[in-house]
Amino acid sequence: MNANDEKPRLIIDMDEVLADTLHKFLFLYNRDYGIRMDIHQEPGKELHENLPEHLNGQWEIYAHQKGFFRDIPPMPGAIEIVKALQARYHVYIVSAAIEFRNSLEDKLDWLAEHFPFIPWTNIAFTGDKIIAADIMIDDRIKNLAHFPGRKLLFSSPHNLLITGYERVNNWQEVAKLLL
Image (cartoon, rainbow, N blue to C red):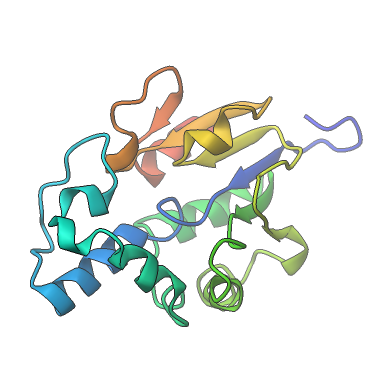
């Protein structure tokens, strides 16, 4: 908790935490290559590692396209629960958006549409997530590994084999832990 404030700071990641990025990728792979939307995703592997080898680099092409991040569906329950979390926490959205240049505007517009109650002052687009806070919710251990506060690993197929972190499988589990 902050010495200057009664509310703890909560950092929330966007992709695969607030935004169902996997759904967007699957939609595009289905549209362009006929890959089934319910393709088996082997635990511990990235989506592209579960696809035919000739499609290995396609995910990067998609992610670099203008508009890719603009129409991703929100994760079920994310909007309502994040809104409720604001009563107990200073909520910050922190996303590694610098890697995909076109994602900056898309992600800002996406947040304005789905999370208009998060002020722009509480949004950070970064490379490394070196933000001071009390709690972080993220799907990537590279972001959680050196974070000094409480770490909540949001489940995604790529991280299902990882242990040693407090895990949340969905937004209802986040609500039970933090509200």
